[in-house]
Length: 435
Ligand SMILES: Cc1ncc(COP(=O)(O)O)c(C=O)c1O
Image (cartoon, rainbow, N blue to C red; front, side, top):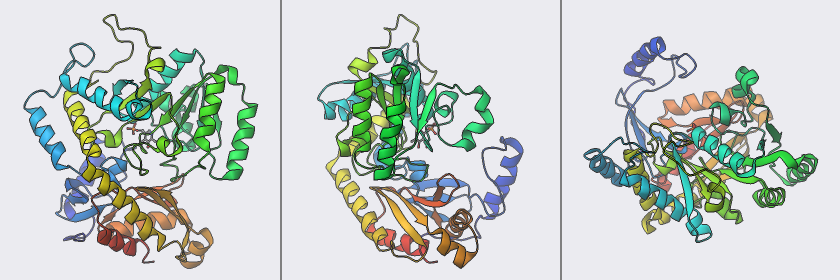
């Protein structure tokens, strides 16, 4: 099966919704023009249907969330079952059974697998929330307020998380309100980057550093895969300095890089891990998870939680999370993940010599095509960023949904789900590289 388009893209209904939305949504949110966006109506597996009845292939997993594909059967079943019982509870006062089950499942797949011990969890709603809970945890644990983060990092846009984002575009407008308790280092992309990082770490006054916050593979910045020694170096440094290592696996978690969590590929156990996205495959639940030792820094609740939210441990979301984890743990899913990762690697490998391609970066189910600036300029007389944005629009016209990545949108990002078979991957790549 390939995409089925029955109207111009965007179709008349999408265009009409765009005009309506413009009137009522903050102008900063949705980019609306004559050729963008399409409005989604339904989705299943790899496929998305818009309001005009056009069927698209989703190569984004909708921001890396639908790793198992859109609306897997088991999750729909759980949603139906749980919605017959309870959709909202009193998370930090009278919790639901499903909250217990999700925290147990998270403990089992993290510290349970890594050290055989239990982990403790703070459930939250968004990725940004989970990061902020982790920052509070590290501060309580160490009493030290400086945080090391990395250039180009993306950790979400709440004030706490934004403080440690590397992108100027998001930080600048709010600069005056952001805390200055952070140090930003260069994210290493090769051996020279590692040497520079070691020099930078040697210059840091570590006495006030309570946390190092890092993405094991930088996602939004352009799928930067660091050298294998990177996380072990940070693990060693944080242990020496009495700081917490916080891994932001919101994007990389749940097999996005091929393994359950990216840190497992280099044998690093963090102090705190933040997870979200594929944890529920679409319901807004995130988690800040820590070892027992680190989480014991939080005081015992005496009836008023020191950190909570109205929707903490939402019963529906927790039930979905439990089902998602069960699904990820199934042998059949493991096989599908392995095959899918292998298929993408093999097919993309055929295009590394394409005249416009500088390189294809990534691993597992997380890839980015970096275009060759000179070759693009010569052929299309535009910058790689402009070319890449145009390519995204052209692909949408062919029924393929992709996202630009990188600080200027200059890379083509691919974060596919595991339900796309090899034939469809080959077809999709033919469209992408037909230039
Ligand atoms: C690595 C990483 N951290 C944090 C976030 C923020 O998550 P949210 O948008 O749910 O706040 C994202 C979102 O894309 C992310 O990719």
